[in-house]
Length: 236
Image (cartoon, rainbow, N blue to C red; front, side):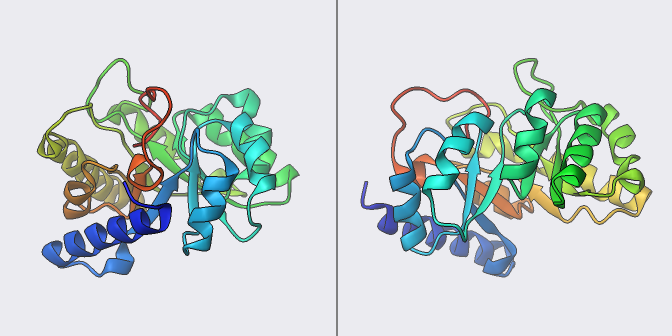
């Protein structure tokens, strides 16, 4: 692979090409650089090349890393969040992509209020039904969305999903399409503006964009191979 700057340029070119094929404006899709397991020096290099949005999986790792990075970056939590880490997460992140329960949503709202902050949240949906995947079953999502009017410091703005691992990017298409269809149905039923769809990684970002992704989560395509295998929430 090339340098981080070269890799970023390559990924942005892939995003632009996919948007053109899908008849979408390139600005409709934002690149989230997944810096999980990479040190602050890698983040600083990406930031120097113009990248501003970064995703982390673990709250404790982010707490150690963020102070060592430029202060003008926007941080997104994309990994599973335990309620006992919600207070710290509410102080560190602007976005949480992995809300998977009503309890977590209410806890985040309380801690964001205590921190004097407003967070944007995405509800993670287990579209595939895989037991190993985090996220809510589709049938459980409306109950969580119904909390939106009671929240004061967390705004539900969309959905996230992680499809089953597959070598063929096309294998993810049905899962991405299903998330978009569910989003459209829930938005119509609730009146919520669920504009954001966080889906797609290094190997399948084109398919995700064609199916409506507004965030693609790319780690190895920017920073190179990780030192050890990543669990299912560590976006590649």
